[in-house]
Length: 284
Image (cartoon, rainbow, N blue to C red):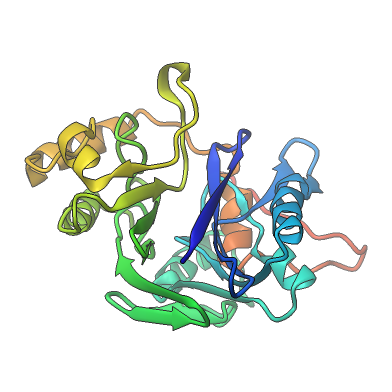
């Protein structure tokens, strides 16, 4: 029997999850965070330390990091888990290669292998994936990015940025290779799951300053999601999503996050002064 623990990073509104099996003393980490102060370039491990403390206090061995996608708003903490738990593996949807091929030229990263080899496991759509004591179903849910995946573990679906809480709607689709049409069909695929499945989003933006929430059922979304209900048409959703996306500013950590996360959380190579650098493309 699996249990669930949730962590929240208020700086990026990111939700990180631990699914764990106390009998086997094993845990899966979903979408971990590595803290970055963009103005100073200072990295810290506050979010990582909170997860590590929980693992230690419950005598859990983390065996797998699951990334729902290459995040554009925070750095992945996957590499910190690789450092502290050398046997751990990092998994992501196989379409990460599309994101790598898209963004390597944006940052002129000439040495990046765009084959997903930075990750230990590449997951396929509709795959029944079993890893030690954990069984999960993989759903390719593109739209926010072409590589997004959602993971069904027991009666818990971890939706990344496909679905947020019903009062926040869905992820944006205006990043390169994003698609409102794709996201519509991804969500309609999710809506075919049983109504009592609990959906856990990758973020909670707490609209109207409400308290933090990290789950809603499929039935809740089908009835109450402010952007896409069960009866919402493709045309209605695409118009809404595309119109709204035109009004959104770029995420604060967009450039740092993409450069790191397409490398499975690794920083760019250290240069001859023992420092690593992140690029910001300038647009004239």
